[in-house]
Length: 208
Image (cartoon, rainbow, N blue to C red; front, side):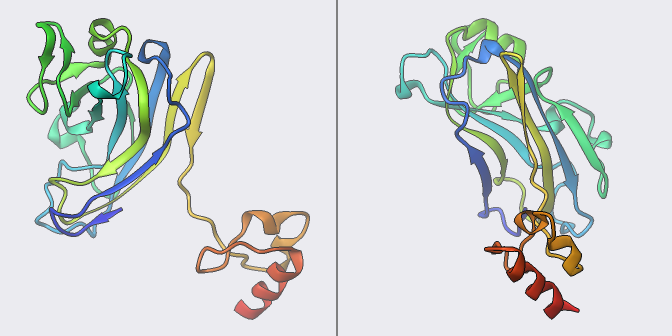
């Protein structure tokens, strides 16, 4: 992801888990990489975040909120590194919310941006909360000049863990890679797939 200015934003969501109760979730994690090419104007503590769009009371979209996990609110600033892949366990971490949700101080007392709350407390004080929309990663406000990457986004519940691999597709470096079904996992430089092994072989030969 690359957000050159404060006005830029990038999100990558899936909608596979709508209706899942937050209380049933046993794992949320991901890996981040802060690229050394990030501009000096980009705060060294900024990384892509995890976002979960939720319905805090299970009653419908009128109470929509987004939960946000950022490593900077879970570790010291010096622990966030550049040029290194780092893995974060968000299920045991601290989150913030874009709209009021229930917190230890009472109903709707966990306010946007100023309330930092553990996942356990989110679940305890919002027992009917469910995933309402997207689950994924975000890089945006406050991240002008940041060049970063994320991978291995995981969510687990009901005994199953889903892990999202963001590794880019690659092209064949030799025609033999197209054989035995290998062409199905390869792509041209523009990202387009091959229709069959022959197309893949022809493309590989053209690159030699």
